[in-house]
View 1: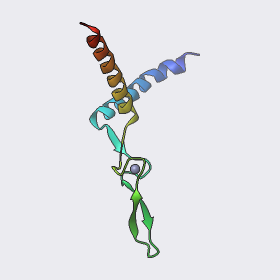
View 2: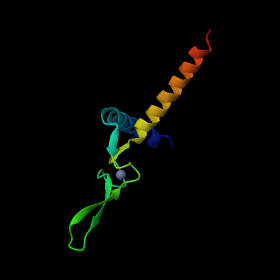
View 3: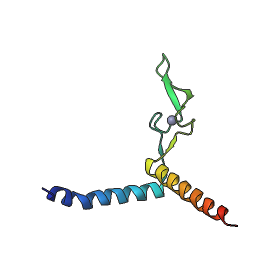
Amino acid sequence: MLTPFVTAAPALILIALGYALLCAASPFGNCRACKGMGCKTRVTRRGTVKRGRDCRRCRATGRRLRLGRRLYNHGNRAADAARRARTDAQP
Ligand SMILES: [Zn+2]
């Protein structure tokens, strides 16, 4: 009953490793709401595409921090705070 899990484990590890590398190489991905445009697009009655209002989700940057990178930053900050707390406590 354990065999499917055992065979799938190396593949999962490879995928995780690939994702970690991706997060290290390019921490930003395109914003999902505006697809990297940084704004909403609207189509006029003539059919031309015009720039709409700025995207609220990425604050008009069109970029988004990848989930893996966000977790990494969070962990880094927490470790940093712990380190600082430890050194501050010393006389
Ligand atoms: Zn956006």
